[in-house]
Length: 103
Image 1 (cartoon, rainbow, N blue to C red):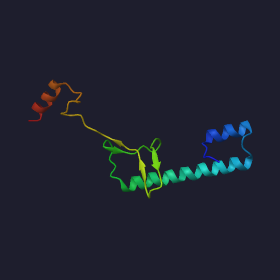
Image 2: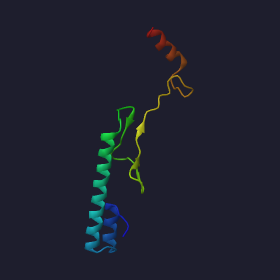
Image 3: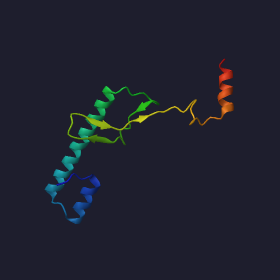
Image 4: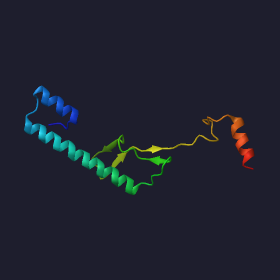
């Protein structure tokens, strides 16, 4: 049986597509998946150089891409500073005033 989310399990029970035993097995598999995700998130927090505002891990929305290799890819938020680049959103006058004020 494919892995189901809690919402999918509930719908399948209401439709009569799952027996009670199948539903219990599906719930147990979903709980084990969540425990594995939590262990992966903890390992990422323990091993990555995370820093607020620079490299952050979003526990609720992280995408984990686990294949056959002995590890996984996990999505993180990385800050990219536009200051002094062609992407800079601050007007030239503001940048110039800040430079003058810090001299």
